[in-house]
Length: 218
Image 1 (cartoon, rainbow, N blue to C red):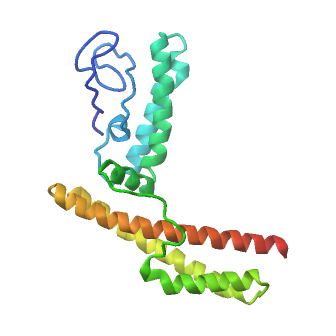
Image 2: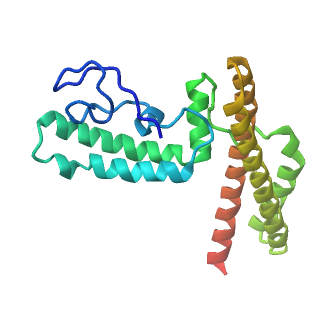
């Protein structure tokens, strides 16, 4: 992995091209870079080497742990706490394909607002109608609707898996794209996939909640 960049001079030795998280010249901990990709020292792209990211996370966890700086200067202790928080949050986001996609979409100016329950993707209208019918029947006491509800759940799980496969394809297209226009075209398609996925995820959450409630009543 490439070393993350840090343009500010080292606060201790003053070298103008100190690196983050540690100065290459005096090895002093620097203020954390507020960019997850730069902080982890990986290219800003949608496809990520998960094993490499995990390895880097453990390396940085050991290097930045606050216990290593208890006898250090106040600035180092503060930077250690800030860097550890950034490390944990960054790892949580970068290792998750959905959160990583949302991060890059936001950084490129795409709106990724919450998917509202009334905003049914047109291609899912019929399937959502059938699912809601099964939910209503089950809530009305019709146990025969359980089989239909479970079948719908399996179907939507398959749709979510299909979207995940399409997302991986978009990741590769984006990272290989030449030029800003080509990359933004892929990101626009990816945003549509994420909207559909979020809607399906909400449906599955609702179904699971209903099935769990039903199970506790029997």
